[in-house]
Image (cartoon, rainbow, N blue to C red; front, side, top):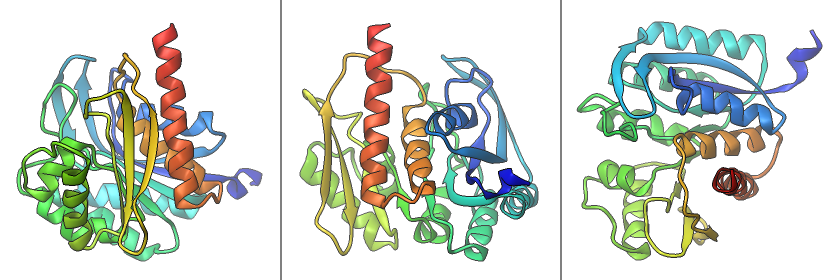
Length: 253
C-alpha cells in the first residue's frame, strides 16, 4: 500500500518493439529521474530502429479504461501523452483529462516515426488541436510537427518558429515548447511560449550525435519533474538538461 503514495507519471502512448522510442523510452526516462510509471497503451507497433512494419490500434474505450484504472490505483501527479494514432483515441483521452483537471498533462504530438511512417491518421490533427491541446499544460512539437499542426511551411528561423507557435497558442494551447533539434547551427535552442509570459529560451550546444526517442525522452523528463512538484519552467529546464546529458554520454560511448 505504501507504493500508492509515491508520485506516478501516467504514460499514454504506443509500444515500440525495438525499445528505441514510445513507452519503453518513457518508462526508462521517468524511472531514471526517480518517479514511478503506470500505463495506458494506445497502439502496438512492430518496428526496428529503421522502419515501422505494423501498427495495431487499441480500442478508444480500452485506452480510457486503462487511464481511469491507473488514476484510481496510484497517486498520479502528471500525465505524459505520446502516440495517439486515431481521432477516436484522442477524443477518449481528452474525456479522461476533463475528468481529472488537477493532473497536469504533457503532450508530445507524435505525428510520424523517425523513418517517416505516419503515426497519426489523416484528419486527426484538427481533432487534436480542438479537443486535446487546450486540456494539456504543455505541448512539445518539433519544427516539423509545428509546421504540420499550423498548416504552414517549415519555419526557417527562430522568429518564424515563434510566429507559428503563437498561431498554435491562439487555437487554445496553454503552453508550447518548440524544440530546436531539427534546426541547424552550433546551438540547440528550445523555446517555451505561453500567452501571458515572455518567451523563455533553453539553450545547449548542438552535439554531433543523435538517438531515437529524444522527443519521448524530453516530454517524459518534463512530466517526471512536474510529478516531483517542480514548476513548468524548471521542469522544462531539467528535461532539456537530461536529454543533453544523455546525448553527450551517447556521443562519448
